[in-house]
Image (cartoon, rainbow, N blue to C red; front, side):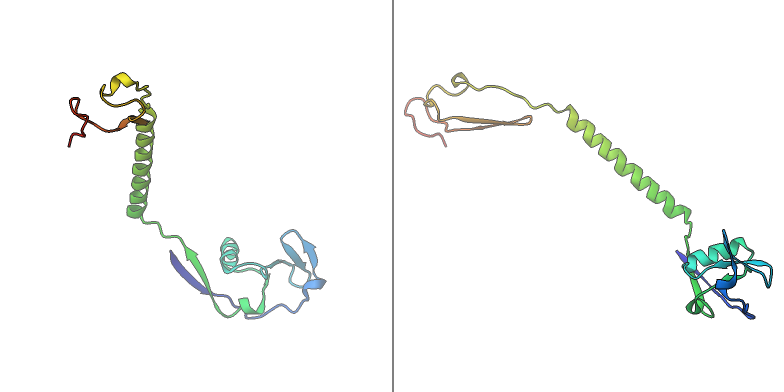
Length: 154
C-alpha cells in the first residue's frame, strides 16, 4: 500500500460559533458566510481526505485542533497486476486440489467382510486369529504355525 500525505490548514478561520449555526443534513449553516459547514471533528484522516476530494479540496468545516497544521497520512491500495494474477492462480489451484481430494475420498468405499475360521489355517485354534478392517485396507493379525509340529514359522 502506498501512502500519500497532505497538510490541512485554515488560513482565516470563521469567527462564528458552531452552536449558533442552524443544523442541516450535512452539518450546520453559517449565516455569516452563507455556506454549509461540515463537521470533520469526528472523522479519521482517510475520511477527511475522501470528503475533501469530493469538494474539490476546499470546504468550510469544523476540525479538532490536532487535525490542523500537520501531515494527514492516507493509505491507498496499490494495484499490482502480476501479484494479483499470482494470487488468483494460487487460490484456484488450491481450490481445484481440494475438490479433487474430496472426489477421490468420496469414491473409496470400505470393504466389509466377515472372516470365519475357514479363512485361517486349520491348525490355528479358534479365537487366536484377529482380523480388523479399516477403510479399504485389510489388516490380519495372528500366529502362523506349521501343521505337523504346531511350531511358529519364522
